[in-house]
Amino acid sequence: MSPVYVWAIVTVFLLGAELLIGSFFMLMIAAGTTVGILLALIHLNVENQMIGAACVAALMTVGWYYYRRKYSKSLISSRNRDALIDIGQKVYVAKWDENHNTKVKYRGAEWEAQWIGHRDPITGYCEIKAITGSQLQLDYPSNQEKE
Image (cartoon, rainbow, N blue to C red; front, side, top):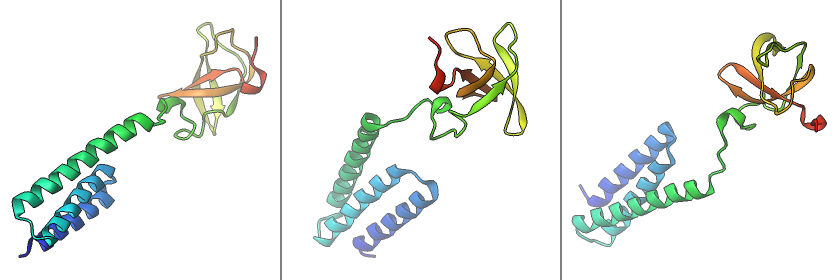
């Protein structure tokens, strides 16, 4: 079997695996095998094809890793509005206990809540700032911050 076909089969396999797994790094390795196809087309020996494919795959994988690390805008998931649609929602608090904890009704269920504000907790409407496990972390609503 021609090396071009072998590289093409490996590339298609990697692209299919990437679609199933969802790892962008798999695309970087598939790009390396694509270089293997190109090197096979210009009739380089198999060793040089492998070296070229491995170098490109390694460089692209490392490059993607550092790109993601530098430009990643990841937030702490418990405070990330994109990950949790509850962040920023308001809940009504009737009373607080001495440890600044309470129970609130939210989305049809009773939730434990904790005050995370720097000042004394307020009764009335509070804003969900974070979620830790099944506990809501509450603070003053953004539009009426207390001084």
